[in-house]
Each structure stands twice: as structure tokens, then as C-alpha cells.
Amino acid sequence: MKKRLSALFLMLAMAFVITPGAAYAATVVSEIRLNCDINSIGLNKPNTEKTVHNLIYEKGSLDTGGLTIDGINTGLSYWSDVNDSISGIGDGDETINPGRQYYARYCIRLYDDYSWPDEVGKLKNMDWTPISKVSSLRVFFNGVRLNDIVLQYNTYHKTIYFFIPIGHPINAVLSASSFIYDGNAKKPGCKSVSLKTGAKVLPASCKVSYYDQKWNLATPVKGGKYYAVVRAEGQGIYSGFTVREFVIHEHTWDSGKVTKATTTEAAGIRTYTCTSCGETKTEAIEKLKITISKKPVIQTPAAKKTAIIARWKHFAHKTNKTRKIWKKIRKVQVQCASDRKFGKIVRTVMVGRNKTKAVIKGLKKNTVYFVRVRYYDGKGYSKWSKVKKIRTKKK
Image 1 (cartoon, one colour):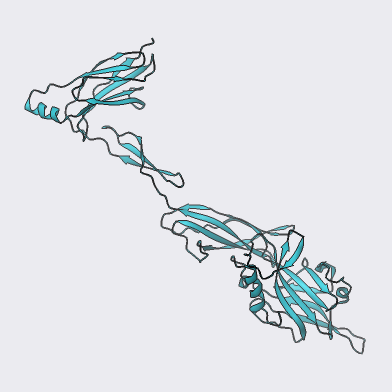
Image 2 (cartoon, one colour; image 1 turned 45 degrees about the horizontal axis):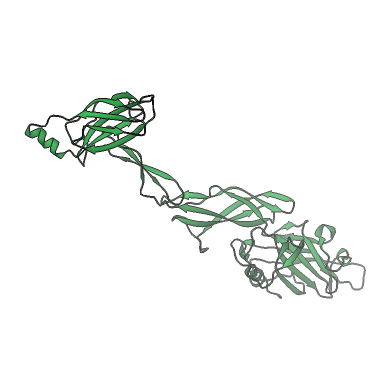
């Protein structure tokens, strides 16, 4: 990696001091100025580490401030939790990990006519050194002086490796992670976001981009899974990104179940359940039609210990009009409830139209019940008869 670096990514200017009082002295490089558009190197989406590494190197140019510098190159490194060290990026295709601390690595080598400050020359070969221990060397990044980066010095080649922290791990919570499809775009924002930089936790502002499952920029409208890429900008040079998933759910309803029976007096309710998420919706069922103008006359029921014998009389059907009514009747419906308003129905039975009684079984002993009857013609019902009260026997 030689003298091509990133136009949008890197501008390097070096201020120098000439040591006075000597016939000849090397130019002392005491200030390094770096500028980086972090967004241009691909950390804001799940590129491979190799891609980001190459982007840092390939896109750009270098301004040396008129000095002749040898062997300048740059690349990507990351903090390895395994051995507590900073590692370079190889040729692998591992995807950028939002939870990993990355560094833009700069290697600057000087010709013999230039030298680093004396403090640098005293450093041990390739030891990790905080910049705070080299007060005579000032490093700026995007106009901010860096006081908490680390460097390595190669004593044999007069080369310094600077490691500038980029792509910090961040904590981000979306305002919502699940939506119901309604034809409108769903773009969750950030409920909270912060950057983790070593021992520091910095508040941050954030920008959110949205991608579909193939990592194409998308406007989330249709049902499915989406990715929200949260880009956080903190104080000074600190920035990073993370990926959060969210879904837009389109319901798939089952065929429905009657949860409140319809009657001739009130509409019923049918409840539908989404087969994938369990959410429910309801719809009203129209009241039953009164299609029979006559109704049976209920008699006093007979009680047993765990059963009731409901009894009724039919209307007289001797005239042409009443015979027509009787002819279309198919069944007699008998209903038993534990309350007079029939809000708690216990049993409902159907018997043939010629029957005049029906046994309702499976009841509790010594318990009050209410009974009513009506006709059914296959399309609708008659009105209910009057209600009769009966208590089952104790023994």
C-alpha cells in the first residue's frame, strides 16, 4: 500500500520544526493532521472487512505539505478480545461486525532528512504506546486533537503506526420493532442510542437507513422483515453503526369461530385469529330472521336429578293458512340456561317438529334452570316461547 490514499478519506499535512544551532539538523515532524469522511469507507452498512480495508487504501490522495515522505500506507484494524490486541485485516470475507471496535491504521515512514521528536526515538520497538506519553507529537483527526489513541514505533525504519478509532460499538434501541401492515411506510426511529468507547459511554445523535432482506435500500411498506441500520455520531471523532431488525406483519386469518351465538334478538360475534401471530379480530353476525309467525306453547317442565324434560304444545294447524305454516317447520329448538336472560346457555337441542318433549341431560342436581323453545324452518326461526323455571332434584 503506497502513495494513493483516500481523497474523501485522507488528507495528511505535516508541520515541521527545524532544530536550530547546528550546521545540519534533520527536520523534526512534530504535528500530524488527518481528515476522514468516515461514511465513505463503508462502515455504515454490512460490507466485508476486506472491502472496507481496500476502500481506505484505494479512494484518495495524500497532501504531505511539501515534505517527501516514504512508505505511507493505511488500512483497517480491529480490537481482538481474544488476545487483547489490535489486529490487522487479512484477505478474509468476514462481514463488518457492529459490535467490534475498528481502527483506521496509518503507517508513516520518514526519509533520513526527517525525524520524529526525541520522545518517539526513546520508545521501544513496536510497543503499544498511548499518544499522551509523547507530548511533543500532536495528532489531529478531523480537526480534533487526539489524546487517547495508541501508536507503535518501528525503531529500525523510523515508522509510526497510528491507530485511529472508528466504527465504535453502539447501543441502539428502536422506537418499535414490530408493525402491522396498513399500506403505509413504517420507519422506526431511535428510542435511545449511545456509543461505547472503551470506558466511555457517549450520548449520540443518530441517522437510520432501511434495507430489505437482500440489503437493498427500501421503503418499508410490504409485510416482511427489514433491517434498520443505525448510524450514530458522537463527540469529536466518535461514530459507529449497528443493525436492528424489525418486521411488518400481514395477518393471515383463519376461518373464524363463533364466540357469541346470534339470536333473533341480538347479533352474534365471529372471532378470527391470525395463524402466525395470534392476534384476533371480530365481525358481527346478523340477527336470525323471524320466518315463522307461530310459536310453540311451553308447558311446565319435569325435573329429574341431572336432567330436565321440556314439554310444549303446538299451535292448531287446521286452516289452510296454519297448515302452510306447519308444513314448512322442520325442527323444534329447545334451549336451557342458568339465567333468565339466557346469557349463560347450558344446553341447546334440536328435535323433530312432531315431538312435544325433549330430555336435556348432563345437568347439576338441585340447581335452578330456565327453559324455552321455538320452531326452525331451515332458514329462520319463530319467536321464543315464554320461559319456564325449573329446579333439578336433590336425589
